Length: 276
Image (cartoon, rainbow, N blue to C red):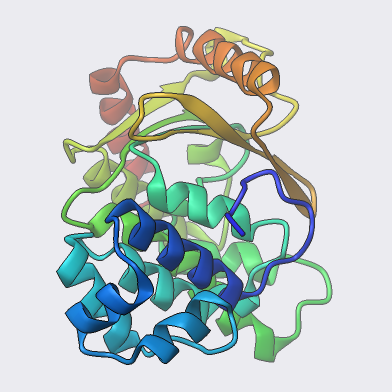
């Protein structure tokens, strides 16, 4: 089994990890026994993990990353699936995998700060606003949201291009203190060489994109092939070329109306003063 971003049926964390392990092993041209010998674990355990019958120890994931020179690909996936995977909706899990493998992410957001750029307090305020969320589930959901941001702290993170509507900077989420910290975080992250934030000013009067946010992922093969469309209460991961291409065109139509990166950072920094 291979992980397809377009799958519609739920896949367990063990099955996700099994598919990725098998993919990396085959890419390295190794049999299960050869991989087992290299990492110092039994062939039977490697086989059971690949079949989804056993949960891989974290140390095993670390050793495979080391032997196959995968940076921290399997370890990151292990952490994600075992710590937060059970607290993410089934329909969102495929996008987590896409984010992890992407070389470039393009994000348009008309209403709120994108999850990859949220502070913890902002994310908590967002989650507390959801109807009927149980207190015991709040921390789990919050950790799941924040752990997604680990991809931006890797040795080789994806390039993130984010276009945000100016209204996001002005909409009070969680109070003045929360907003001041969130806008300041955007200003700081926006200075990173692997993050580019542009603001679509209200005065642009652009209507393209007002129907909802979305993200587009480009793999290391240089192909834009997967997108995530956000909507109230759910979302959709798509990999149909014509639909992804249509979203890519929509993204560029929005971006061309946005302020430059330098002007956007200036506006973000000016907005901090409004919240403090």
